[in-house]
Image 1 (tube, rainbow, N blue to C red):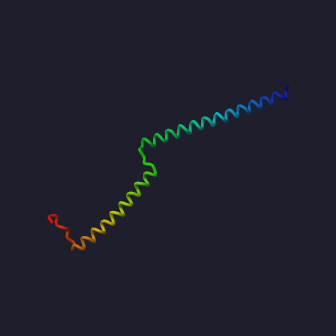
Image 2: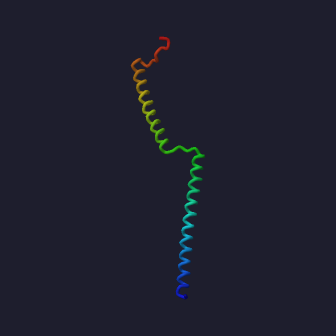
Image 3: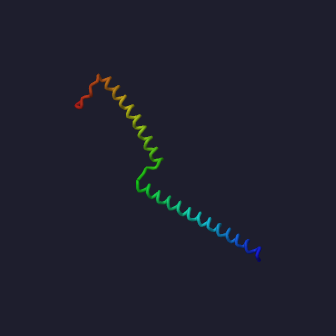
Length: 91
C-alpha cells in the first residue's frame, strides 16, 4: 500500500493539474469571447465603415474625378471653338 500511496497521490495531483489547465483554457476562451463581443459592440457604436464599402466609395470618387476632368477639358475645347464666349441664353 505504501507504493500505491505516492503513485496515487501523483495521479491525483496530475488529474487536478489537468483539470486546472482545462478550466484555465475555458476561462481564457470565455474572456476572448467577451472581449471580442465588447470590441464588436464598440466598433458598431462608432459607426465605422467596412473596408470593402470604403474601397467601393473610393473607386466611385476616382471615377467621378476622372470624368470631371474629361468634362472640364471638353468644355474648354467647346469654349475655344466658340471664341471663348458663352452661348446666349436667349437663343
